Image (cartoon, rainbow, N blue to C red):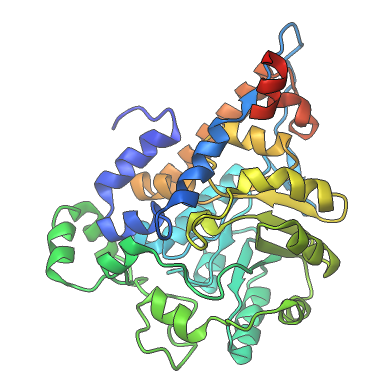
Length: 387
């Protein structure tokens, strides 16, 4: 086993081990993938301010997210089909997050069900719901999340319709994979993945199959989206979902200051500045570009988090410095899960934590809660300093 020192190391192992359709599902965006790429590259334009002769002892990355103590202000984002990246993947990721001391969020479109994850963990996790056009299902699944002890509801608000993702269409993405000739040829090279998958019964959308009728292809994410996701979503419907839940709510998918204002007005406990990992509106700005304006507008009324493009502890530091109180990571933990299972998710969290802690020290900070605009330089700052 090679030495793992960064998230890219996990990504390389992940690519070798996981079937192409599931690698492409995680590692792609919509249309031209401009926004998908800029989520990452825009972080690279932000520079850190090095400070010296500062006592670096006694550092702490501990913080809180919606009142929940966390080892670092990082939560595992909801990612669909995680159980196709590695057998029983949601259970493994939830266990790793629990052991590390950060929140795990289970997707509606997970392979392991709410009940599966609850049975294999000892602390509450968060549950993510899409805005479906089926009130009976919404009530039922929210009731199941409450019964499982979930401590927060994450409502994804940027997926009323599915952005066109060319790779998913070409690969015929489904769970479990359909046995076309190209798929079978690719699976033949991923024998370790296949052996593990044969040893689990969890190979379908565990939260949905058997709970909903009226979908033409229950193995297809695109079929679910076209036939069950609600294109008529509005703020009244978001309030209705919040009322159904009656607990802490995070609205994920905010990329506009006006929308952030509305989210704060309806009483969201937190919002996630997000463009769905570049998988919805291609050509939208990266999350980190929109973060400062949104944090300035509503950060005093609701917690502002972000996701999209975070591949290192330095990226976490930059997001916190620009106004986020926390971040969510998706691809970074999926790389670890696909590469090494539960141990890979733990390794991804360890890598990010080490980078965050070391970078804080070199920036002259000992507490993650003290990070701010003074720790970073933006391109406009470079021009000011060197003109």
